[in-house]
Length: 303
Image (cartoon, rainbow, N blue to C red):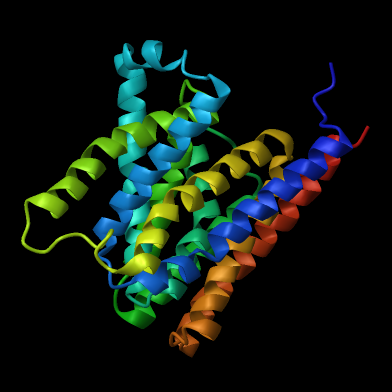
């Protein structure tokens, strides 16, 4: 049986991938207008309303039969508890970075992420790296080393975002549930402390949360955070099932590129020449990685 996707499904997958990465690329423009809200509170609303959206979606699809068996399997709960912790860490740091004026450094994390994925595949899954991939990893390391030396400290925001999302992707790759079910379970795990935190902020502290107390605009933005979070993730899952990995490997650079341009051109974050050299190494690594992936994918699809 052929495993090659039809042209129609490929076009649909490409549209879904572009939609997901455009959404993630423009995400700084969503968080910055509500930067008066603490990052932890934004994160809690993002999780809580994502859970609400997923509950409505799964109820409409009558797709709850998997939940009971999953909750009775300690290994499944353990895997998704860890993936939930990594995802919440990644989300929190990204929101904090955007609202702290560190969009450029946050974008660097997602430029580095493909190299982290390669290393995790080699170290954990024992995947072999081809020569061009080794060269790309070496260039990425050189870029990070340059930034560390020129700035006097490692780009910890970038590295934490790249490593946390890389580990999250690794866990989801070996997780025993499908994309929608897995996203729902890890969001459910995150929602328990998130809802508890929001309740504590509302009723047990002198300073209430911002939801419902900081104007219609802020309340609406926090409420819509669930849709803004869940819809691109579901589009990404659709694309991952229908597109070749070589195409996904190239399209994924759209998101950090948009974030970088927003940081420099819209938010006017400083970008010194020393950073340009470090970014240059990493961009060269991504160019090699992307072109090599397209070349290998074309050879594999050739009759």
